[in-house]
Image (tube, rainbow, N blue to C red; front, side, top):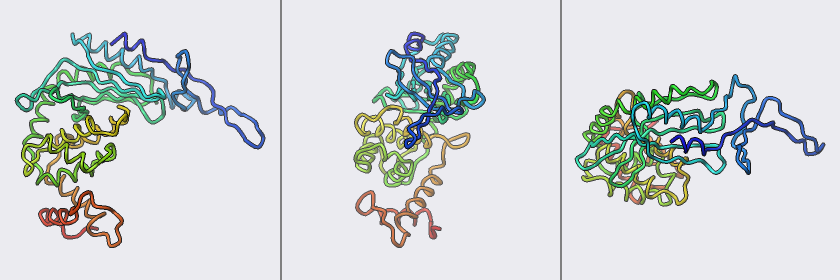
Length: 321
C-alpha cells in the first residue's frame, strides 16, 4: 500500500491564462489555478479555484497512505488495485480488508474499501464499503451509508476519515452480511419488472446491447424468473457492468454505474421495499411509453408496452400525471 502511494503522481498549482484571439493577448486569471502532475512528462490534471478557502489540493498518495496506516493499525494486510484516469483527474482504489461474508452458502463476498478522489471542484474524497463476489469477480460498491465517509476540497485533507472508514468497514462486516441476507428475502414481481428497474437505474447506458445484455445478466444471476430477489437483481446489474459493458470502458466510469446499482441495496437505514421500487419504476416507464400521446420513446423489447400495462394493472396504477 505504501509503495503504491509513493508511485502515484503528486500535483502542484500553476497559473491559468486566458487568450483574446483578436488582440492575440494572454492575461492571467487570478482566481483560477491549474493542477499539473510532477511526472517527467507533466499532465494537467485539473483546473480549480486559486483560493485555499475554496479548494485544497489533496494528493492521491496521501489518501492511500492514510488508508494503509488505518489498516496497519488493525493488523490488516491490504490487497487490491488502484486506477488513475489517463488525464490524472480521477483516482479509484478498491482495497481488500481480509474480511469475507457469505449471504448465500457458497457465495463468498470479499469486503473492500472503495476509495475515490479527483483533482477538480467536483470530486472530493470518498471512502465507501464495497465488496467483490469471489465466484465471478463481479464489481460491487457502496451499499451501507453509515459506513461511508467523505470530505470536500474546501477543507485540508483529513486522514482521520480514512482511519474511521477502515474501522467502520472491518467492524461492520456483520451489518453488510445482514443487508445482503435481507435483500435475498425481498423479491420483485417478476423478471420483466427487474429488467425495467435495471433500465430505470441507468445500467443500460454502459452496455453495447442494453436490453439483451441486461436479460443475459438476469438469466445468469436469477434462479426463479417469477421471483427475482433484490440481491439477484443487484448481482445482475454488477454482472452486466463487470462482464458486458462496452469494451475499454474506464473503471472510474463504471464506478458511477456500480453506485447506481447500489440503490437496490440502500434506502434510508435499510434496503428498498420491492413493491414500492417496482411501482415507482413502472410509473416512470409508463409516463414515457404508455400514456404519452405522441411519444417517440422506443420499446426496450417487442411487446414491452403490453407488459407495462399488465404491471400497471398489478400495481393498480390508473392515472399517470
